[in-house]
Length: 83
Image 1 (cartoon, helix red, strand yellow):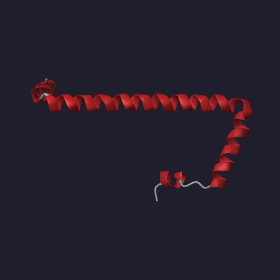
Image 2 (tube, rainbow, N blue to C red; image 1 turned 60 degrees about the vertical axis):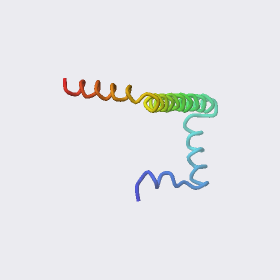
Image 3 (cartoon, rainbow, N blue to C red; image 1 turned 30 degrees about the vertical axis):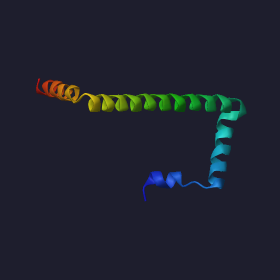
């Protein structure tokens, strides 16, 4: 079995031990700051992935509406690879 899958297979008691260890390491005053920073990081990642998704959908829609633009883009890409 892969190590990642073993890590994700945590029960309730293992989770409680991990949370207790984090509380001992960082203390009660630092935990809200850590959680806030983690939340901001997750939000930024989510926003960035949403932006990439929108850009992909926009390019697909443009290619479907204007097949000539897709052909021109492929020609430009092949020119860049040749040089």
